[in-house]
Picture 1 (spheres, rainbow, N blue to C red):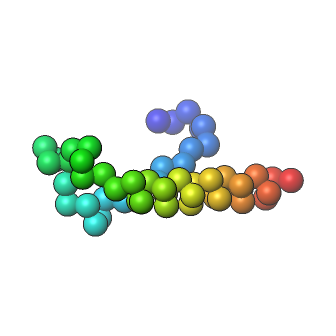
Picture 2: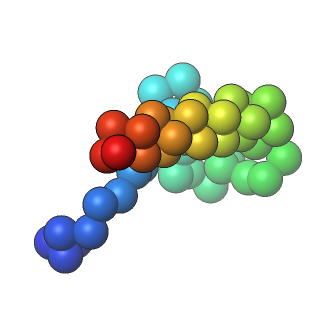
Length: 53
């Protein structure tokens, strides 16, 4: 964990009662939620890159 490698962790578990339980199965995943997280992640990376220029 302490490798000093920049990383991003985007998770949503407060509104997902099945998180890390036996009921946490693939059919409960939300494609819409994955799309939103993917968009936020990509825009965040772009913003970070712009800040480094």
